Image (cartoon, rainbow, N blue to C red; front, top):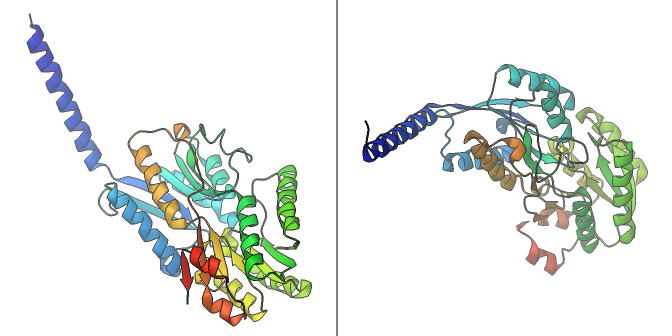
Length: 336
């Protein structure tokens, strides 16, 4: 008969052995991430900077590409019709998790798999569009980051624009389809944005650009409408074309405002909004939790990831605009 001390010792040894076995298995595991992005880091220095932030964050958590981390990358180049094929391909490869942005991207991956965890980011209204059940308890196989409030961000950018260019009365919005929002939700979004503009004495001119190839028609529409300023909405198409949009705005003598700080670095007058680098750090934390056994449906969705103001002083000078000292002091970065 085994006595009590011998029994406890045996159980303790078994527990240590199990922990050591689990640790060894964990160390030997190569985690495979499927990632559907907009552009490859090799094609865009801004994407390269953001991607390096992600790899650094993963390394600090113990995951190193080429050792215990493998990446399956796919790029849409702003063409949303690529999402379904990329989603099916990553599911076929049996990756451990899929990272994807925008409502359309998450929807495509959800339709391709109900088992593989999905970490979303830059999704405007995941609850309203039915991608998740709630921010606190997303349910299913989806978690991640919701984009900062679209209306609040728009209102703040418009307020900053008026502080720099008070004579701007008509502002053109360069927009794409609000993927995932039904007609009623789009109507609500439109009313909210119009109310924010009305409060500042601004009328809005909406110009549609759903695909990169629509840019010529969009430019012609803007020239025809003769607005006082330009605000490209945050979406993959505008991100891909941000340098071209900045060049066009400067040629037309239009103050242009973006939501992503890279827009200002590429020539827009200023940008105010969430920082992609901050999003990459949060994505790394979500991935680490999932790799350690957390269920995505139990991980609360983060709402927003900070905001920065970047002002392009060179563009301001070219447009003959003076940036108020108060804004220069508030800015996270001023490009001289």
